[in-house]
Length: 223
Image (cartoon, rainbow, N blue to C red; front, side):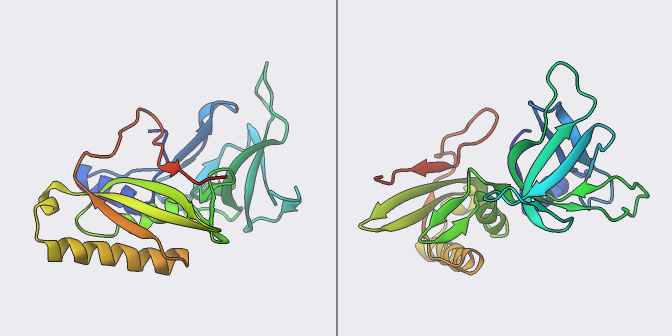
């Protein structure tokens, strides 16, 4: 699908279906799927460097960053006709690895997208990516892979509430079990994000589903 996933989500899919799931990257503006893709080593996506020149830049200054530095991906198409892209800013945040892969390919690889410059949330001065939250949730037993981030503000402070669907097998458990799951999520989010977030457990299939990319963020902050 066109939605991003965490490594924890990949593991769940591989275990459920008994297959090897690979990351692939593309953008409609560039070529669609096929800009880069993983080999069976699953150590980053090989960039089709015979079709694209790729850079990472500092999103604020535009400075080109060296391989191994985290930054915004910028692509230039060198074979595309009719609509070539010159230093196209993707808003995707990643790292370029120029080392030879164990599979023998020498094309540069890009790491899994770590977030986007335009979906990064700033909560009380802390940068938060939804992918970080998904990674935490996928590690916790009893939680379904459906969640919503609700942003509000109280006075001068922003507040983050994470609404999480429970797996059907856990929804009917005792209050003590549910309280333990909620506390576990809250503690793990605090460790990973560096800030506290409210956690609300909701019943299975109660959060809205979307075709294509999921819309995880509900921003109710008063500007």
